[in-house]
Amino acid sequence: MEDRKPVAPPHPAEDITEHVGYRLKRAAAALRGAMDKALREHGLTVPQYACLELLDQRPGLSNAELARGAFVTRQSMNVVLRGLQEAGLISRPATTDHGRALPAHLTARGRERLDAARSAVYAIERTMVDALPQRRLAALLTDLDRMAEALGGWPGLSRGGAGCPAGRGPG
Amino acid sequence: MEDRKPVAPPHPAEDITEHVGYRLKRAAAALRGAMDKALREHGLTVPQYACLELLDQRPGLSNAELARGAFVTRQSMNVVLRGLQEAGLISRPATTDHGRALPAHLTARGRERLDAARSAVYAIERTMVDALPQRRLAALLTDLDRMAEALGGWPGLSRGGAGCPAGRGPG
DNA sequence: TCTTCCATGTCAGGATTTTGACATAGGTGA
DNA sequence: TCACCTATGTCAAAATCCTGACATGGAAGA
Figure 1 (spheres, helix red, strand yellow):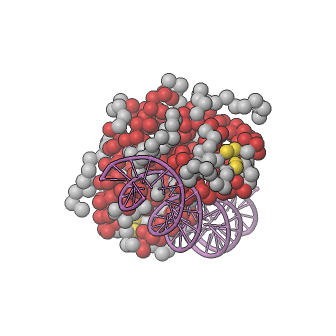
Figure 2 (cartoon, chains in turn red, blue, orange, brown):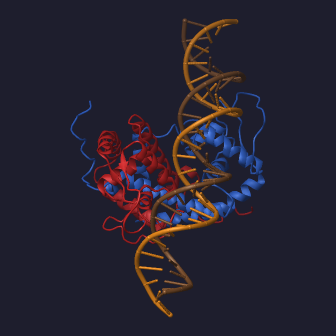
């Protein structure tokens, strides 16, 4: 109460809207909004699109792996997966020989839908990239990664092998 | 307008996890996760904290303005505001002389709670900032803003020009 | 003055997401 | 073999958020 500043701000700013976290959230919100709008025309939600995209590039991912890749909980991804399966965009075996994880795959219709939606999403991505100096892109990606990892990041989807995420799981 | 050939990726990447949007979402998810965890110990959610912080720096904001500032809809912010009001952290008049917007203000308890939670959040912010080269911060903020605005941004809470924080005109 | 338009606050309904919990499958070390 | 641990899939309940809709208050223009 006496001291209104228990902790020194990371960088000088009297206005919360100057903080990194706020800017990050703003950019993410703008992206989410743009994607929501664009994907609605294709009958897809953002998590659904993310799921399709991940499965296209890495077929056979399990529910839990997709959840980590799309930054949602296993439970949420489970719902998404059911919807996608009902719509006939993905397929998943009812059982498996070894282990418990059920590998998911895109169907022909799923790939078709993905191709259509991808154009819209890539256009958005291009809008973002074009908005900043070309030389900055690499640095921006690096910085975003650094921040994410510093925050404990996400168990994530390491590109090489599904290996051992072994971090704190969201759920 | 629609070229049938697949839209060229904004930058070369066979892996979706290389795209700007994905990295942005990852960083935002990491931030959200860290804030969720930290704020839970203070009995606050992220939107609640955002609301308190905004009200501390710009007292008298209305529901709709807070919604824009916290990147949620008016309806969502309305729920948040009710909760905060029930908890005695903010106050809002039942009626107003002029106009329809009801100006909200922090209570003593609200300010107290905010001060406690702020320490945790600022620590997170410092973790992020410390994770990247000092010289890059300004450029990062600029780039995030550029991307957000290129995407149509958010109706937003204009920082500089429009309206003085204390006595914004119409409200 | 009157009409039109926009912004706001609010209600209702549904969709999405999360938290918490449980059972199963596989690996590890005693 | 057995106990222990981790990861996974799933169910149930609650919380959160959004879409759609409506009524009110104020400003701009005819």
